[in-house]
Length: 427
Image (cartoon, rainbow, N blue to C red; front, side, top):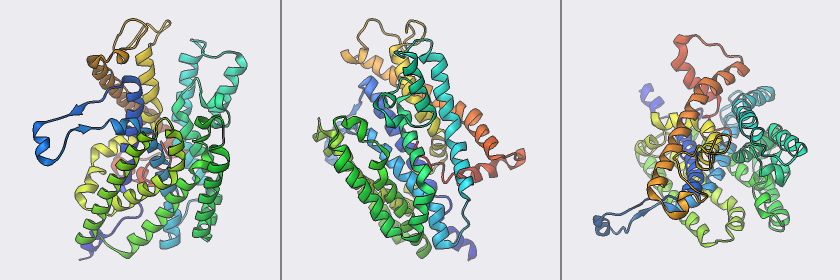
């Protein structure tokens, strides 16, 4: 009987489906970047679709709006950063020290990030002289190495790796998180209101009045409401998990809510496309509301039926989640370098094309398909190698871990839990 109770208990230490949400979100963002380079979109149609009321399967709306899933990753970050604190509040679990918190963040973030910056510095930026002056190079490099690229439009539009701005946003929040968490534990509702209000005022007074909207919409304060939703969501989840056990009818209700929230996300993203060319305004104005729907999805998914949870927690998806940080770091670099050329005179293009006009401009479907598959495969290979042969060893070195080989499988599970589902950072 005790075994059954444990089986039905809702785990609050390791929420397996959230690793899957992380993986899917990262890959949707990546496919947005792939689509930007290839313009490829496969529309699927069969005659029998009409018999069930369908016209076609067309995911172009998802590829074109994939950038908003950075917000999902930010939400996950707030949720999982605060989860140990929520467990401390509700279950009395022990918390890491602030020093350990920052050490884990360094172990997780810095090695792969610095590797990307330094690799591009010595194999692209300097050899190809992508900088206008030495001062330009120094300023950009300093900003990348100190995670301050979001303070200046020039360094935000870096010559290094454009996707790293999200890491800078995360690091900015890490710096204040222990203080925010302290107040959130003391006064959750008041702190939540203060965070969302600060974000709202910043958006209204600074962002929407700015001349350079593209630079302002992704500043860290615009995400404070998203972080707040994640933190409050962790507390709500803890209370639900401690009040209920997994039960057939309750799981069915949460499954329905999860499916409905996905439908709401689809409607909101399609609505954003109708706002063109003002999609940036829509993005920042609806950021808080969209994150609420994202939160509804991740909480209901965590409490849903086994079949739905399996989609987000099977072994393959866990592998994708494990490599997702390095996949995110390198996917756009690979996509751009393969398309526009590598080598001294950019003569190496994969797959090859001739002339000054890329094949996607002429609708070369064969090239588009081949290119998309190649950059996807290359990104997976690079991410896998760097994760298992660089990221993990460096993280263990920084954390001072030396485990016997026979404990390998157990350590994998402990590594996941220690990292708060591997999703305590946005990418």
